[in-house]
Length: 535
Image (tube, rainbow, N blue to C red; front, side, top):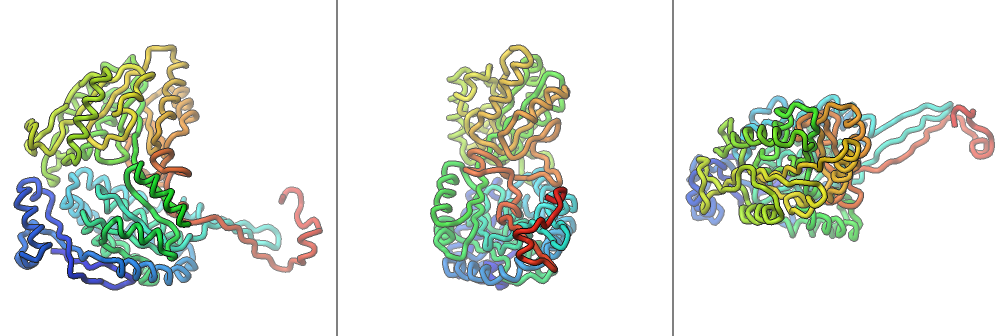
């Protein structure tokens, strides 16, 4: 069994209170027994050495004193770490990259143990690798510092660290999202991460296996990183009120997140918000419908409980029937199972009642259920009472005009329900304009994608769509790529000022520097100090 105290300023901090993690497959096969073991361990009725093999780890629960120590340590680390050469900070990212590659299978198995289906655990790990790889590092180096020599002056435009950044990852993807803090560190910030009480093990283990060794390798102060497993409300309030905190990276629902962002501003903190997504995937009439259906099926990975999957499809009327036929074939092959099973892609759904309510709303507003609509057991058999999985569900909505009235179209759903909107049968130029307008009308703005071969359609779509932090054409909707952002967006996804999230840029600010030699100040003010071509 792994055992971690809170990691504060280079020290392991124990506690008299522990949170135990039970392997997800054990919870699925014996939920009541697993919950009883977990409760007995946490309440002291069962000794740690008596825990069964299904208990994979425990984490000490920190308190306000631990959080304060982490913040004070971070403040002390900033002057040294922020002043470290950019090459040193990027070498830290390179170390994280190499450690991730070396420990890839170990990370995958950790994610599986926490409940991520194997295929998705592989996908998340590949995202960490792409986001820290050489192409991404080279791009970020250009963004973080630019130097120009102009006569006797060296002109520098650089990003300067904001200071202390606090990161609150979401419960559904703690590991991948806590690793986004790598780039806040690369910008020269000190980082304090809250490990959620519901799933702290992965966050603390990744910190110990990847981040701490990489920071140590490049000589960063031990206080540069702290990770505390703690209560959400108390910790967030402490971050807001602390004079030591500069930025807060917050993951969560849109309504709560936008309100929290406003609180950050009121307390003088910069909010970096990663909220809900309600992504649109558009399919034109000239594409390979098999490939388009394959991309749309990503909507059901992890039972749709991933913010960056397609949540809505808009389909050209000429291919709607053929596409739906192919999509149904693919969707019916997506099944539940234990996370260890290679073919399993569905996860237990936390909000089955909300799923049923949203599906009922769609049907009442005229949508047609094409496939799905039932709760399932672990074996894939319908179980309307005790099923913790939901059958992947596709509903057809005809026409763009009233589509936003349907909750499944208007809101992020976070369960396996994909509305496929069949666009109106109107002239091609008008149709493209109406689809672009529809995509831009989305209140959210994480990712959007397009499947089309016609160069004019692709160009019109890319030029016209302003919504979202990432736009992909003829590609996997959720696949990670070097250089491009993995997170971030507009509207209810990123709040006011939301955009594609490069954490190194979002947690730093631009500063211009001029270093001169042999300049007479009076001449610099009053004389023509540069030729016209230099101006």
